[in-house]
Image (cartoon, rainbow, N blue to C red):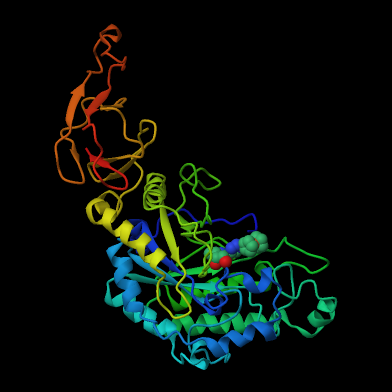
Amino acid sequence: MSAGTTALPAGRPEHAWFAEARLGLFVHWGLYALPARHEWVMSKEQIHPDTYERYQRYFEADRYDPRAWARAAKAAGMRYAVLTTKHHDGFCLWDSALTDYTTVHTPFGRDAVAEFVEAFRAEGLRVGFYHSLLDWHHPDFPVDVHHPLRDDPAAAELNAQRSMERYRAYLHGQVRELLTGYGTVDYLFFDFSYGQDSYRGLPGKGAADWGSEELLALVRELQPGIVVNDRLEVPGDLVTPEQYQPSGPMLGADGEPLAWEACQTLNGSWGFDRDNHDYKSVPLLVRMLVDGVANGGNLLLNVGPTGRGDLDPRALASLDGLATWMDRHGRAVHGAGPSGGTPPPDCRYTRRGDRLYLHVFSWPLGHLHLPGMAGKVAYAQLLDDASEIALEEIAPDQQAQTLVPGGQPPGTLTLRLPTQPPAVAVPVVEL
Ligand code: H79
């Protein structure tokens, strides 16, 4: 990813839904589901566009049912969903007038985007589009560092015939289609600008190449309330760390907190990757979510549906596990944010209104000491089952020599926890 991605501070009232949502579903679906070995397969294996194109003939997606995806996402506590309208391979999931390289011109034969937005809206989720700036299929897209033909000795000659100006018109035209043909689009995730990355004399592509300023203006004109990410190399509405959890709040140049969203995979691949079994556990997914909320960020969690159009059992199991946790703990996530306080080791605080949530990543031996919290907590319970958690306080004005056994300083609030943790992915104490 190119350096220098920036975002404006959080603040537009029409964007408030985004931070309240905290958890979204990312869906990477396209032709790469058929080779089923990473969505970058065309670039990684340097597959010629004419060869890769043949997957179009085999895209049947006979089990495509975005309502099922939407139900699973909703049950998992996701409040928005983002679909790859086009990934870097250039294959389009909607009925574009500007190319035949779409789902409509496959045995499947339908506009997948139209069905997706309808299904997710029906379940009450907000809808977002991922759209690739790169396009390894378009005949005008100049060959560069990421392109499958980058090592072709004729790359420079090819590029002499290619026109970034014409490609830019295609890119802007397709974004116009997506933002005019599908009702209100809540979020747009562009991916990605890489102006500095030249390779063997083939220059990278930056804001001037994409026409980023103009493109962003077009987006805001067509969808005034939309949230736009930060990957155009011009400032967007949020920052989007990829497979990376920030260790604290993300701050702008002047130290102001930025809206942010970490996008994360289940198994390291965004597209369906059949032979990759390296799935994150459900407790790990919950800890990633909670850690993000404690730092003021969202989690956009990805699934890569199969070429038949349904979710792999491993992905479904992950969403189901998340659903079990979110069902009882969602109120510590939705509409919640940083607390301002410092949690004890292996814990995170999230806060919503006057409730403080203590997420316990590693269950202690009986007592949990919260420095500085004496006198601030009226009542405590396990969020899982509303069972009371007894409190012991050492008043802030007590003498230092009256330390409790174990040596906690004055001002400490001590929770008496049950010996056994509740049987949930991450236990939460509501204060
Ligand atoms: O759509 C997903 C990714 O395909 C795309 N962004 C997310 C949301 C993306 N991933 N990485 N990048 C963009 C930047 C490029 C990373 C690379 Fe590589 C590292 C390209 C070559 C080496 C990762 C590993 C991709 C191919 C091999």
